[in-house]
Amino acid sequence: MTQEQITKLEQSIQNMKDKKSRIYLLVQDTKGNAKASVAYIYDLAMTLLNNGYNPIILHETPDYTGVGEWLGEEYMTSLPHKTIEGQNLEIAPEDLIVIPELYGFVMSQIAKLPCGKIVLSQAHDHILETLQPGQTWSQLGFYKCITTSETQKEYIENIMRGISIDVLKPFISDKFKPNTLPAKPIIAIHAREQREAVNMIKSFYIKFPQYRWITFRDMRGLTMSEFADTMKDCFLSVWIDETSSYGTFPLESMKCKIPVVGLAPNLLPEWMNEDNGIWVNNKIQMVDYVADFLQNWLEDSINENLEQEIIKTAENLSTKEDFEKISVNLFEGYLTKRLESFEEQLNKLQTIEE
Image (cartoon, rainbow, N blue to C red; front, top):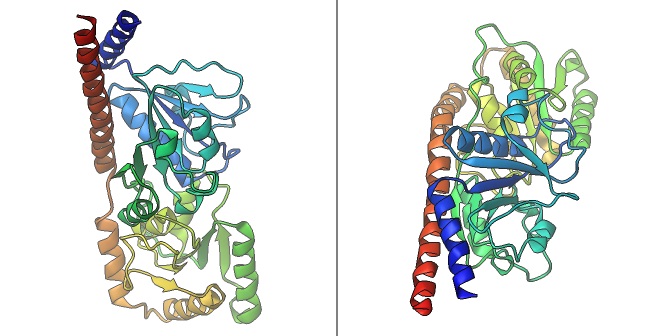
């Protein structure tokens, strides 16, 4: 038995040295709808692919819609995809598997697999949703976590024990940039629940009928390019997502130099401050803040400090280059530590065999 273990370890070690380890990344099927958290995983996978690693996108069912229509067909054609339903996946000890926090049931199913396991936490409100009461990630064999902000890292540290947490901040695509033409009387609105966007729009028109000529554009259902092009035409963005952990939408707005009226989330991201947006704690009062800003826009009297803070925030965002560099460093570190662990195990087994 010891010799068999030695042989398997030697093979795994060689595969790791030859960069043959596979990195599986599980994604949610958005049914063709754009979603920042899924785009983040695909960008991570593409970065790993372009740096000589072997990423494989995992999805739940064979009828997976994919991201080609809204993110780009190159993500579907360049990256290998496999379903976890009814397919025997070849997962070896030298491989890594990355599971989003909302898939606690998948973590339980793969707890005994010998591969390296990593949690990807982008939404703090999903962390406990699918875990059993009292259950932690480390109990399921997940000792490493990647998250998107320092504030979410602090939150995870407070509720999870025995796990190492790294921060990999998303980058905002260069598709988002200021328009050289004057803004149109359009307000971009994005809410986690579509009914909240609808209620906000209806409330605004009822309370301020004199502004019925203003157009609200619900940003759901757009491709990445359409999203960016629509955003550039707007004079204001409205963001309703109190459970957000990072806030991609308001940052996309700021990169276009568009102010944001937003519902302050429960977990404030580190980029947010009292000067770089119009942050509201009461959802019902948002229409009043939108109307106030609209009046200032019409009178060309927008607060200059707000404009400067928006520019400053956008300039300090993580770039694509930052994202790629940190991604490669993280996974190089994960695999190196795993290789060192295997070599240590091999030395012990060889000592026993002698």
